[in-house]
Image 1 (cartoon, helix red, strand yellow):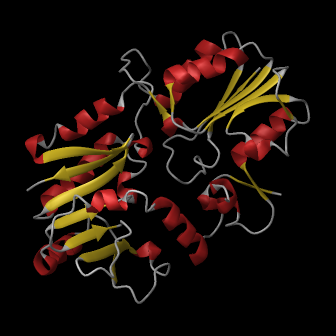
Image 2 (cartoon, rainbow over the protein chains, first blue to last red):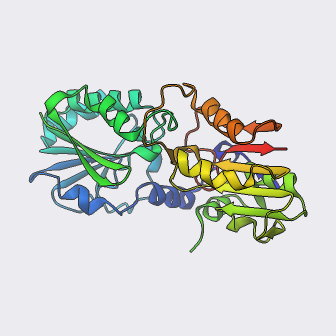
Length: 178
Length: 146
């Protein structure tokens, strides 16, 4: 019998990675998110973006390369905060929105990091930003603060540019306009 | 449907046990255990019983408010040996509590200490817990109370 403590105790196969990616990027709220996406080209980053759809350009982290159908046009990045990726998206794609759905950049992070990542997106892309956040997976003291308090802490940084749409209980869509 | 625990265990060839599950198995042995919460995995591994006795296991792995948690644990606070296992991401409060310790792990310990007064508590947790320790399969915040 082997006792395992964490993912550091073994190597993941491509099949295992596929199971994990599917578990992380649940399809459940995709339609609700899509209803907020404006017309035009939409860039989906680390978000199970369907590159087969004409108006969606999907970017995924390189660590997931190999789990997707190679016929689907997906672009890969090494760093979420890559200047090169930002420049390429702004210059060549000129999207009407950037969508981040179930991204690891917004999971297991503190409210401060979450806010920094939102600021990065807002300051980097010349377009509407839509970020799905599951507050269950945000790392804060859940005996001390309510989820409403955390949302206030985050949104106060964006003034009137941000709107928060409740998707389901602890799940929210943060929409930041230009 | 295969549980998230079993899916992840299947990533590793051979027979495996999660560290937090093994702690529970070692703590209780074959002595009857009154259980509540997400305990299905232990049906065939522990001697789970319906009536409270000398041992109890509570696994909290769904959204639970601080008030609900206190109510849930109240009936087992006098039991000799108890394990409380909590997915700390799934706890919530409906009111801000400024007097609560800033450190969430310590706040949870104090919460348990207030319920299980004058008991010895062994506290296990993963500092800065991310998604690498199977917490949503089996909670990594555990209190072994005697």
